[in-house]
Length: 117
Image (cartoon, rainbow, N blue to C red; front, top):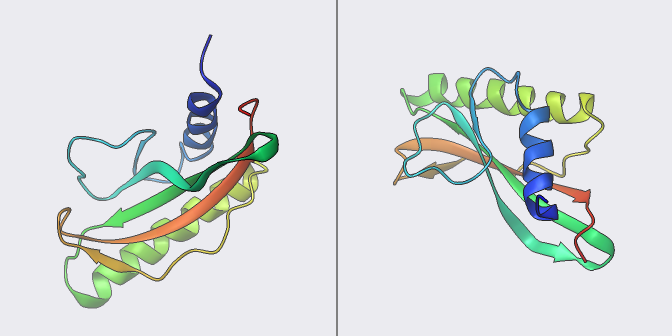
């Protein structure tokens, strides 16, 4: 039997399958943009089986406007794919520079209902 938290990540990853970037349902050993990574959100587990995940979009900082445009396109694809799958994303944070990944990134929380209590 698959854990409810794993099922939540799997459901969100499946919804993102067509965004045009690699989707990691769990943190990879190294981030290689462009990609999308699913991370536990805050609060991670709430009453009545509500689970929050952070959908983090990464784009290479190829330089100024190009990097921002790439991130904007990826974020729009992510949000569109989530809405199309009946999953309502929260507000997307402003882009930040992720020095470890050498990339621009933006986080979008999503809360879904699971059997986790």
